[in-house]
Image (cartoon, rainbow, N blue to C red; front, side, top):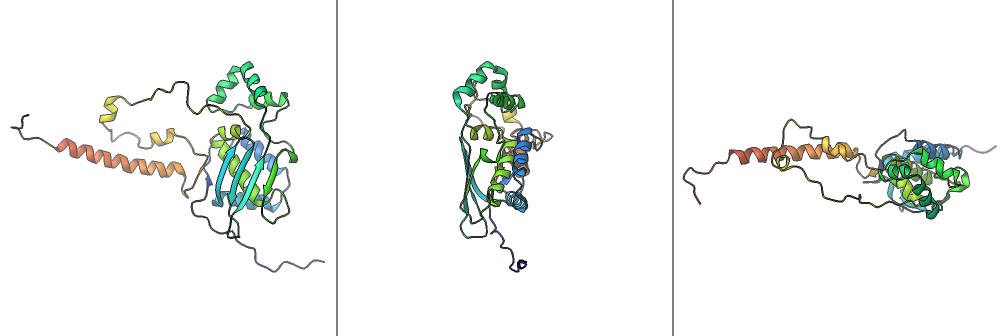
Length: 257
């Protein structure tokens, strides 16, 4: 009979400015499927610890490129652990041939949507968009845990799943499907002159920040949208005050050029 463990669990070192998930569509079908795949690996307590790591901001950095996710995860050691998640990119010739045959899907992807019909079309061509078996992803972490996925890998996968809910282009990038960053019509869009010259106190100060939508992840402890709305409101108050002061200025009646 094994002895009960008597040592205290090691706590992860606190990370200041670590990456945190920023929400997005938590009901997004690709997020649900990715997390369901992760749960199917029967990780036990490691999955819960990984989720906590992701929520607490223990991930110091993450980069997503075609076929590769790299991240640094801070654990109990002084140096962060290095994580790599690999999945062969989809064959581009086949993907683009499929999209040329289905222009509506191409238009939806270019508009930052991710229809489930696209995933079904890929699967019909033998190219699953998401992992379906344990061996679909190559998982690497330089921690001493023998199990894979370890909690550090689980943390990165949880953060990545949440990030794709806010920005599905991250998932497409990981699978090697890249779209131009700029729209076909790149003409700068400006507000009418009247809007530039006059601020309306009754306007919703948070309307413009909300148009930006959620970030995949960021380093603040408060949600990005709340931080940006607060800063925007302060900027609006200062702009309104400056506008009022400018309106009170009067030149002398005898002023002439």
